[in-house]
Length: 329
Ligand SMILES: NC(=O)c1ccc[n+]([C@@H]2O[C@H](COP(=O)([O-])OP(=O)(O)OC[C@H]3O[C@@H](n4cnc5c(N)ncnc54)[C@H](O)[C@@H]3O)[C@@H](O)[C@H]2O)c1
Image (cartoon, rainbow, N blue to C red; front, side):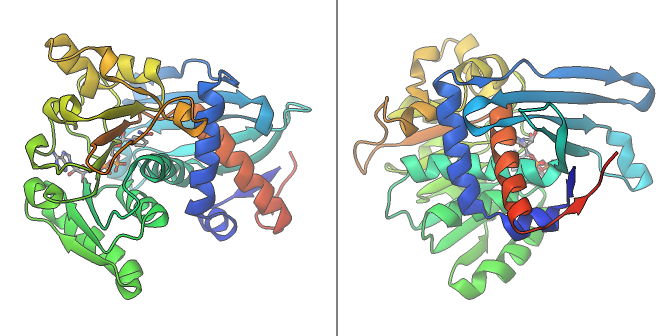
């Protein structure tokens, strides 16, 4: 089996490729061509943590595997990652494990790619200003995805933790500044989203993270962060104002994302606000943006097909490029 580290995955596989892989994953998922059992969560009280197992199988792309993501907050005290993640990929012909790779980077890549896919399918082609709310572990890859699918001239970054936002402005500026992209620190969420064409929220918030009224007509918004019924990033007034609202999985979003669960419970709107799954847009089964003045929204909670399909592609590229450490048990 092949062991793949983050740097090796980055060497053989780009965000651009990941965006296309995730589009295909969403399409196959919405066509009912993916087997995605419910995630299994095991609480581990002794370690004050829990382990989450996310299996999936997609026959058409020969992608079979399980991502294991653990949440052990006390790890930080002993200098270990609080959310360690590993992807285990299997050969569908034999059931044998063929690769083990860095699941943290795979998550960052495929989550960035999900927003990248939606931004590519839904935002205005002439989008020039981006905004990112939340400057944590996922943010750099969200930024990379935005810049992969649109030629943005400026990206504004806001985080309630100003030091985190500043650090992202610095690292992103080093990478994209010389390519002519202005990476700017926003002092408030209003300043970040005012006039922006593409907005991505990637926080751990339990309340809307920007004022919906500040979003301009024609903007596209990606909601990435919320994945429990208590978490919320997207303002309900924006969802109501939006012309088209897409999700990765209708079922998962309606049972996991507070962005929808909270306002639906409050009677502000109902599930019919969702125009469709993003995979239906890839197959052109549903109409996307139909005019430059429309507001479009994409909400993702993340589904296992993104991991297995992307991981299989990375594995293939690594084999071709003879990258990674081959081991046998
Ligand atoms: N949709 C998916 O597929 C997917 C995949 C991975 C992670 N996530 C989720 O995305 C979220 C972000 O992940 P991360 O790894 O970057 O987390 P993180 O903890 O590293 O960073 C979150 C950041 O959000 C900031 N924040 C919190 N509330 C805010 C607010 N109201 N306004 C502005 N900033 C705020 C925090 O200060 C922090 O810097 C998490 O909830 C995570 O579970 C979703």
